Length: 75
Image (cartoon, rainbow, N blue to C red):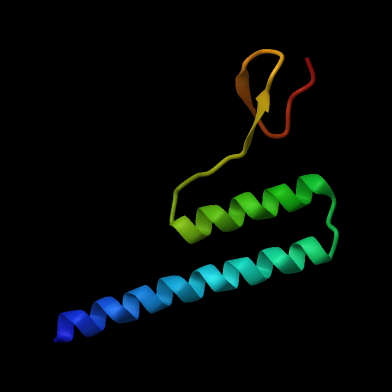
C-alpha cells in the first residue's frame, strides 16, 4: 500500500513538472522572443525536465543529408 502511494505521488509530481514546463514554454512563445533565445530556452527546459546532463537541438540539412547542431555555423 505504501509503495503504491509513493508511486502515485511520483507520477503526480512528474505530471506537475510537465505542466509547469508547458506553461513556461507557452509564456515564452507569447512573449515573442527572438528565435535563437526561444530555442535556447526550450532546450534548457527540456534538459531540466528530463534530468539530463546535457541537451542540444539539431536541424536537418537536406542539402547534405545530415543533421547539424543549432545554431548552424557559417561555412
